[in-house]
Image (cartoon, rainbow, N blue to C red; front, side, top):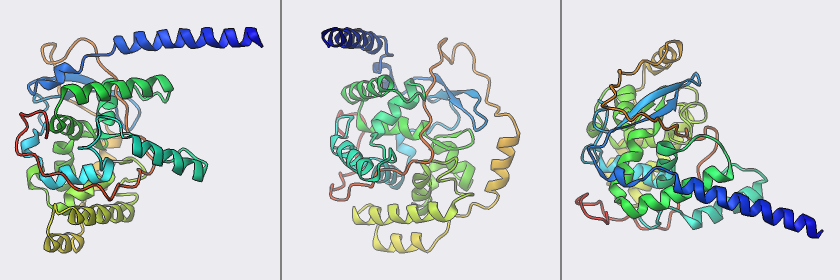
Length: 307
């Protein structure tokens, strides 16, 4: 027994040392404070192939925070991370609720990643589902909360999140589904895109499961009303409208049949090392939005630390 305990302690020590080294070697998040920054990551298309993706103003679909409607920002926050403006990267309450739910259901069906964690994962980490990767994600999220404003984190998230076959970011998604720029999105369209986030490939693919996406977007619209983001009249108008996504399946089929083609990236635009981000899990239902948190006021500026 003594030998077993010694062996376990030794292995724990080795893993702790490995983890510390891994955290030290992670990329710095300080560079993300520069809004002119352009970095290249790799994403996987719907055929499983890796593709280069530019994060920053040199991406033609890049949408700065000032051009993203408030309804789009709050739809995402209420759907994905209701305590976004309260936590410092990790939502302990959401983690407890997820553990309780999974124990009751005897499954691992509910996640508890914050918007900050998802951003860190998409920008810097791989898809591997390991304890080490999760700990790296938590550490990066904590560092991002120390260095970046909430507005900057949300801007990064909304510009890299997957919304379709090689459709990343709200700028590309709004044009792909609705043929309009992000600033022209209606509350219904904002809620519709936010509803897709847990799994645009399968679970919340609007062509395969349009009814499911609409039901979730209805829920998000009612949350927007309950938090005072939209008026009662806007809610009724949105609920009475079904997004016009005719031709979407043609776009999806075309994208799946053809190889994804992205603009050539010069060596000046992209760093030598590419980072492989994770893609959000597909079939996992999101944690139920927290209802009791009052909605913070929309930030008036993005230059301050608190937004």
